[in-house]
Amino acid sequence: MGAGDPLEVAGDLVDPDHRLPGEEESVASPLLEDAIHWQRVYEELLAFKRTLLRPAEVQKEGAPEAVVHEVSNAQVVLESELGRLERRHQFWQGRVQELQP
Image (tube, rainbow, N blue to C red; front, side, top):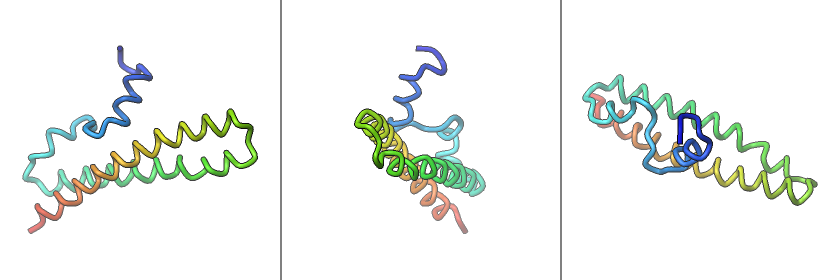
């Protein structure tokens, strides 16, 4: 599977161990700035995913069964992604607290 392959991308998005490019190198960094950077990155990603999830329920109201099914499937993937992002955000919040003087 090549770069941009939908199955590979989807797998990464729901993989609980998936890390963003450059993130793994910062995990052991003693620099507070690195932890703050990743905390902010995850805050932005969480806001984005939540924005995508908000209209899903409205979209399903009164929609044909096929639409409800597809939107529900999209919600499952987005909620899985959201959970992964929340866990990574919590990790970086903890890392910021550890590194603060």
